[in-house]
Amino acid sequence: MRRLWPLLKARLRPAPIDTIGALRAFIEERAALIAQKCAIDYVRGKTGLASHALFTEKPFLTALDVCRWETFAVVLGDLLILAGGYLRPQGAEARLQEALVLLYKAILESHPVPQHRPEGWGDLP
Image 1 (cartoon, rainbow, N blue to C red):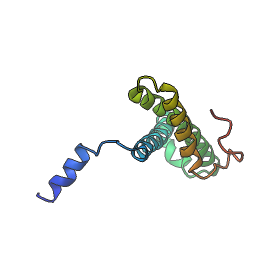
Image 2: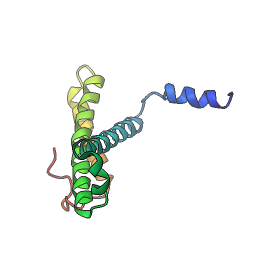
Image 3: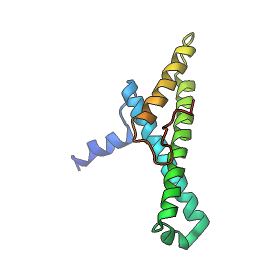
Image 4: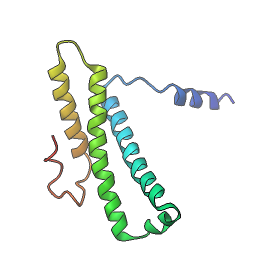
């Protein structure tokens, strides 16, 4: 029990987000989780028991990959907007907005370019 308590405590009370790297990891992980969960849950909800068969079909998996990447990009932007609202310093709103836009681009560019976007993410703000 003594070894379990520190692990449980760490899970219940995670470390504070006090660096840009910690913010990036937090936002990126949550965006990926939301994109994945929403896409998979939607498919399972719409297809019911037939969803198992869909996950073996190449065209479906290709479309699902597109869905997850596009959802990730949108959710990432939304989470950064929420973080900006929470972090908004008085008198430095423009600097914060610029930093969050740069963080958005850095996160997207840190991933391999998806097959459906051979030009990358340049068309997004």
